[in-house]
Image 1: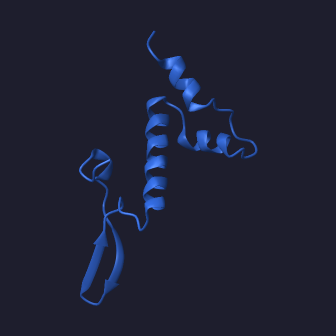
Image 2: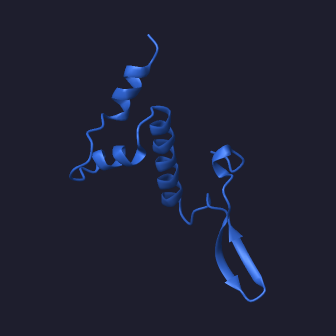
Length: 85
């Protein structure tokens, strides 16, 4: 995923501010490879849930087995169901 893609059009966050100087880091930068992988994984899940018209938070709650959440099928099952024959 490149910084120029449509997912990266959000306002950058302030990371450090000193009197008269503010240094910005765009929201898509991370401090480690693990952080980049986590961000990319969650963005991918979010986009896939959106394309399948299911709530990302419901899906996440179902996977984490949070009590009183809706039952949401696995994304792989939903993708197979929606695939053209």
